[in-house]
Length: 387
Image (cartoon, rainbow, N blue to C red):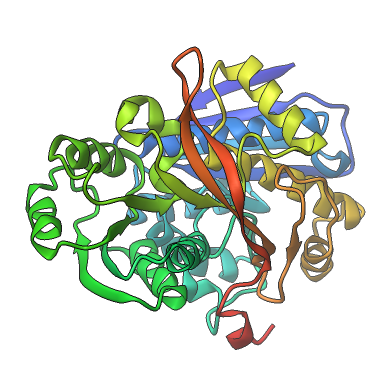
């Protein structure tokens, strides 16, 4: 049984378990309102399903999840982190979607020796020289999905590309990653405003540049608008469109509609990956929430399984932070993506796949595997991490 208590704008979700020597308190700081809220809701829902699948007690400890809406604001995220540490005594924080928010709260968490398990944000600044023993990313390093698409577009023989991304850390990392593996000519590279919804000017630039293809990274509502406007401008049939999983994530496909069908994207996960953990996750998520899970939900689910495995490996001792970090580094758990292990900078080593947006017989849009781009792929910054 799970109770939900609303207090001062923060939801507290507690899994009722027998009393234990210690209680695990997790701060869920994610985006639950405004632009990008669909991503945060998927993170929250995926994480809570993971908690349910480990019996409601991570590492055998009574577990309380304290929820806060960061409103996609770095200032709000920092305030929530401060409050959850000082007032609520959380030992682990998770939930952050956006890289600028992750960078904003990391100093607070590190000073307080609170572990940060990121279910999404993986900025390069936390992967190289700025790596931290208190930061674990269970999703990807920001460049990775874009690196995979850069490799695919290169292999497919496209010689002239136009690139587009929002102007914030993940957007900058995205194009850096793409260009790391794409060696053709870049005929245009545009950074848009974060949250921008009108792309008339950028579409005009694309048409004038006459590229062989377009690579774009625009998550959430930004991607919905861009893809629809791209098709409305008549460009989809003229200039192939490519992107990372975030631009064609399950949470936005319904809103995009048929404009997304047939477009290829890259990801470390797909709902049709054939392994027992993923089959259970997808089936139970659909039963519980009535929708196909997104990449964000899958990452948050794995974040919950990592926390469970790490706390269990540490013997449930939350007081020895060094031992807890060491336990997280080598924690073994069955992930929805199959092969997974941490690199020395606490970012994953994993496979990356090519996916295609398809329309099912009932009209539902989703992604299906179309190939493997990288096997056991590592990020480019781990060599600069001193851990």
